[in-house]
Length: 381
Ligand SMILES: Cc1cc2nc3c(=O)[nH]c(=O)nc-3n(C[C@H](O)[C@H](O)[C@H](O)COP(=O)(O)O)c2cc1C
Image 1 (cartoon, helix red, strand yellow):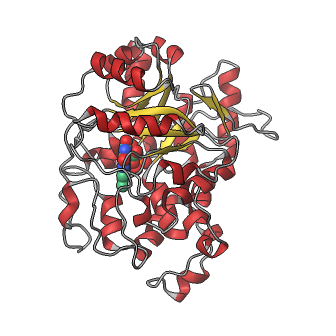
Image 2: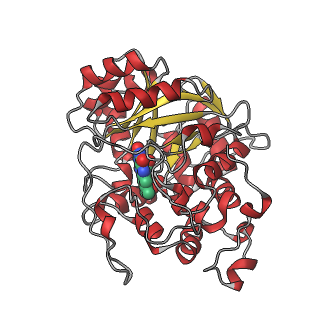
């Protein structure tokens, strides 16, 4: 990881008011508060980039609302004094059942960028999935990681496959990276029509990767994708040929990200080197009205529960509370991913902001009660 000084941990931003300066991360109580603070501190460009979603933002909103509509069935008189939140993801021990989903362009939020997210993940032993479109190279991001820290690398297959092969060759040399996360839910880019809150729509709203930010978050720094795409993301990828090709260029376990139906979960489970799936609608950024991951998880439970035995099934999208984590785990997810909250956390307070974000999501008692109840065969929600 790139060396990060203490001053980076509590950066003084030019557009930060005095009041915000004294507001410590500890005083922030919910992820909504991080979003509000980051919104005041980061550039419009960075805000729009993270906030945006496709079409009418129906999937983005539903991702969050769906968790509120699921009620818990709390079991009582369970000993929650000692808690172990660790779990495994594709065979790797991690400290939390919460990981950071791949997020492009983190340096738009804060100069520490993806290395800052990783530093915070390191505190909890949480997995960080590095985006193919990160603003720092994978080598820079993993360079200072703790010895046991677990990373995944997210791949967008490029039209010219040799581009992706070159990236995989680089990843193969990084022992901290334990899995390849193949994102499959964006064969074409989502259509963003952003212009809310009185902000003018920004030019790059329809591209997920702004390469020329109007307001770099660090003066003089050119923030762009560290591994630029030359031929463009592939729109011709298909199951068999893509997974065979990938297995030829990486021996790491594969996690497929962007599964949205039980039928596709079943297909994924037929490939030996696919060890996990992330049920995801890309935070509602690609195909508006695509289902929230929890709906897909319920489909899998109903129509193909064997997939939950064969694969590590994870979810992301809309996780904003510890209780959301609990609900997903109770319904069979191995772990949950957070996307935008990591970016807001970074924008609100750099590494300390992402640390606090992961902490706020960690609802110890509920998690343990859930885990205990699952062990004893009861489902608390
Ligand atoms: C700003 C932004 C950038 C993203 N970049 C990527 C990416 O590069 N690769 C990817 O697979 N998903 C990407 N995603 C989707 C996230 O990995 C994740 O699926 C989604 O954000 C989860 O929803 P949440 O933001 O409600 O937590 C991005 C999402 C956002 C908001």
